[in-house]
Image 1 (tube, rainbow, N blue to C red):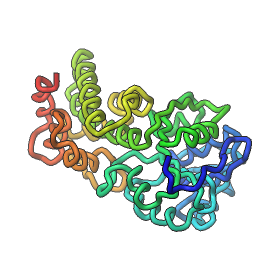
Image 2: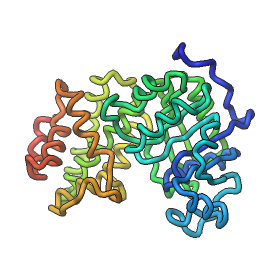
Image 3: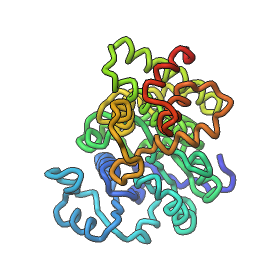
Image 4: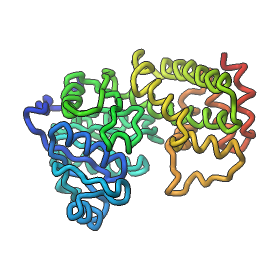
Length: 334
């Protein structure tokens, strides 16, 4: 446990902690709803006063879940200063905004606050978001909460699974307890960094599986590719010093199977589009996927690891090889 951080305040469900979700998009709204099912009052931070007013007035997030009434336990606000006093801050905004929000949290959040990061991706300077908070806000307890969860089923209360990664297992248990009584199953890994990395890796390998899927492969080819992805994922996780159990958690195999094999996944869709020769604008605001930005960071950190599939994705994304290059690397992946 980090000795620079004050003793952890008990945030268990019986103490009724103050909770805030930063980001009122589809996933932020879904996680706020899951927390409300656990019996918690939740403040949902919106980027604009207009969005917050509309949510409070209509009791809907009409942009993402039209026709669905939000829990009375959810209250929306556009006042960031007001939510900085929450005991537990759930981060659900686009990853590109992380530096700005992390700076505000480091300077303005409670000294005993717990940050629960739902964002999947890698930081361009610090590699993981766990490391970003360790360096910029060592007094903050950082938890990574990630897994194979599309926002709509989570919002609707369908059974879903996520991994709670916390360096302090007691903090992880307290965060997990906030979802008690709902339909969210949680497993635990005593390493926030490991969950950060696993959740970012699956974005890249979902692109690889999308490239494979673009050819209309047989089931043989699909599941051969999925198996090779899992093998390479294990090599990378081991090389990066991740906890040995993270591969078998919801944030490991669970997330790669969902993101890599479901056509509703953004990163798989990128692979499918590239494989079919459909031009895509990787910087369009409506099609930003963390996997694209993760490739270069992973290549820089994993140069000595045997990663033929990761290398193939990088070659295709940067236009140095055609989509069929992914198939050329299968033989070297075994």
